[in-house]
Length: 279
Image 1 (cartoon, rainbow, N blue to C red):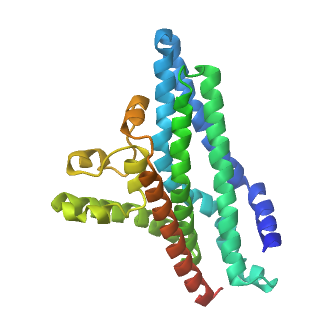
Image 2 (spheres, rainbow, N blue to C red):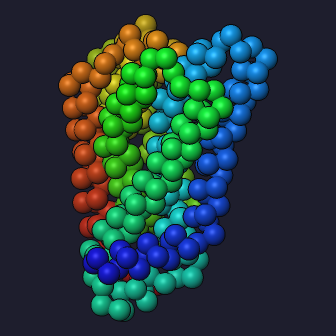
Image 3 (cartoon, rainbow, N blue to C red):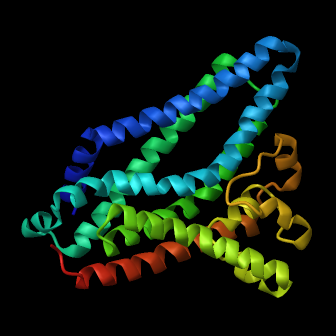
């Protein structure tokens, strides 16, 4: 399987789709800090405020990356469906289990490369254009949130990978994956508003911990307005400092939920793919 992963990585990283995606992410990262720099030039006295705001944006953007996992999977699968080469891969002697986990491994590698290059460019452009924060612990605060989000990203990738193997059409599996993210969240949100007894059910949606554990918003009726959208909420960095220092319960919540999605999605996806006819 290692040879298969190496071959897939070689093909994937040579694709224009991969390079263009990375370029767009990097340009967007730089563009955000360029906007802050323009504002900074007009009001240099507030430089530390601009730096704190730029850092605080990273945290809610972690939620957006869950939706972007769809692009990471599509980068790996797009040519397979376009040229219908799945059967050729199996004819080379690879088992369906090897292909399934090989694709998942390559998707994880692609996501890691895109995410961390984008993050590195964002931070470098921030420090070059605006300077360093006076309180360097703010950077540690951001990275602690990133670490907590990693199991959720793995769960999202496993879910999207399962959708891609079960549904042999890029457009169709994209809609199904987005539905798995958005529909349960909005449904359980509505049920919780009607009856607080549904609050534990609301906490099982994959995007919920990004609001609760990572952004520090408590699951309560009083705070449900802040959790209405499936987009993101930007808080100032001081709010994130005061809201939570990521206690063990929050980290465990992200870890358990992410791994639960990963295991369940992988078991279902692999079981269906092993029985599906490949054309």
